[in-house]
Amino acid sequence: MSGRRRDHITRWAEALLGSASVVVALLFLAPLLWTLIGSFRVEEAIFRLDAASLIDPRMWTIENYGDAWRRASLGPALAVSIGQVALIVAGGLLVNSLAAYAFARLQFRGSDALFAAVVMLIILPVEVIAVPMFFTARDLGLTGGLGPALAGLTLPFMAKAFNIYFLRQHFLNLPRQIEEAAVLDGARVWAQYWRIALPSIKPALATVVVLDVLTHWGDFLWPLLIGTREETRTVQIGLANLFTQPPVQWGDILACAVIATLPVLVMFRWLQRYIVATQVHTGIK
Amino acid sequence: MTAWEKQASRRAIWFLLPALGMLAVFVAWPLIRAAWWSVTDADLLATDDAHWIGAENYSDLLRDPRFRHAFLNTALFAILIVPLQTLLAMVLALWVNRPEPAWRWLRTVFFLPVVVSLPVLAVVWTLLYQPEQAGETGLINRLTSVFGFADRAWLRDPSLALPALAAMSIWQGVGLQMMVFLAGLQGVSREQLEAAQLDGASAWQRLVHVVIPSLRNTIAFVVTVTTILAFRLFVQPYLMTRGGPDDRTLSLVQYMYETTFLNLELGRACAAALLFLTWVGFLTWLQRTLFNEEKS
Image 1 (cartoon, helix red, strand yellow):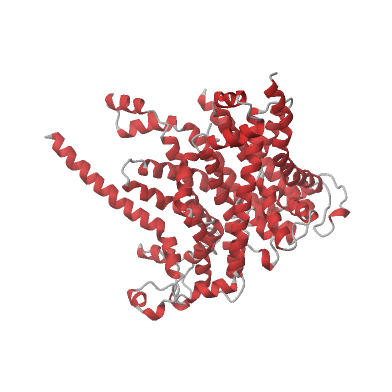
Image 2 (cartoon, one colour):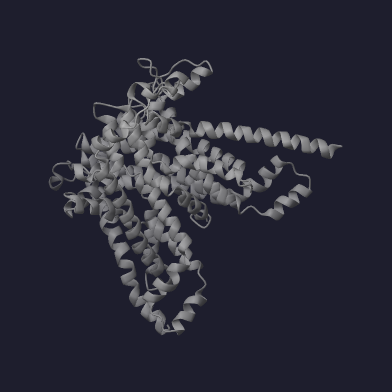
């Protein structure tokens, strides 16, 4: 008797959990859905959600996108933002994995002390050094013009203490036998790193890429400091300008918000997959 | 030492040079400069003409009510965010931690705000928080009015502005912490859970006595990371409230930004930055000590 009743209760509980999930999910998504809808609405209808205005075709428009694109010069801004993230990711992957490999496998006198110094930098918030960093970038001529400014946006963030620490951990976990076998084959240090060690930690590399993409796509303070010229503005700064400089057009702002999100949304599945794999081996320990 | 090891340690410098060179130029050197400027009267527009003034910037800061406000606001923000976000992330993780593929979409929903960047969400939420204005009401006031609450100017009300920023920030960040907890849950021992079930432990007892203890490291990690992130608060007040009303949402980083670029007081801003760094270091140390002691 109790078995069947129990099934009954379980089924009810499941249904309840299911519908609660749907409600919570909708609430959670509401801000994003509202943004998407608002970006296609004429200015006076953005805050109107009544049925009459929702079915009225005159209340819908795609002009916001054209206006936002023009007013925030989103073409160049997207190029700068995508270039910025791509350069940080690619450059960072190379220099951090090289250093991590050295700390994991190429022991020398003082290497442990040096590594300890790097680890101490992990908790250093970029905000602490942003201003003097700006002077350093300026002294190196990394502010004027598109090329130097792109370097100014990216070079300071390629080498990252956390990424070195994280990748070293993964290199250390590799079985030494693979590399020792390669030594017998006469492989040199560089080949060890490039052909054997690096391909073996692909998931960890993917994780580093994901974290860097998420962090730097949303960069704000640094581009605000360094990207003062029109041609070196990132998408985020373009959006902030639309938001703060009159005339304030909500439709344009929302369209700009959607455009600023699309590039990361394209990578979404991939980002989500590797973020799960991430933290298990990470700093948790 | 084998031949390979000899070759290896000679090559090490070339492997380390790029990353360490960049860290030296773009991290260590600016940090040294910040430390130097913090004990001078450096002005943003004339950095070469800086004179040693000892600890004056530091004592000025500790007496400056705005700096105190900035610190307390940021601390309050952290106090609001850290426990709530950690708890919510854990609840969400337990909720969606089911094998059926149908639950994967729910994970996706919770994770979605993480990939949308913070500046974008700050702008969007400013509109969501909008009070009634010429017949235009933000989504949040519409929702609360359904439950009979009065229209509120969330971002302009001195007692609501900071909690409003905290609510938005939790919504944005909780998905990431949920993922961390989901990863942590994979490490909970199946045997222990089954043994507890055989012993007749209820779901709640299993949660308290098996699941949460084995999530200890994950919780420590999430709390530490969230605390540091909370103290770095900048984008939300910069875009949503400009630090207002009455400096109620002025954050530490924003104080540093304004002191540098509006007041041009580089020396004092650097002193604030170093105090900020000391504080973050202290919190990290504190959390590490607390969580380690619990273990033994």
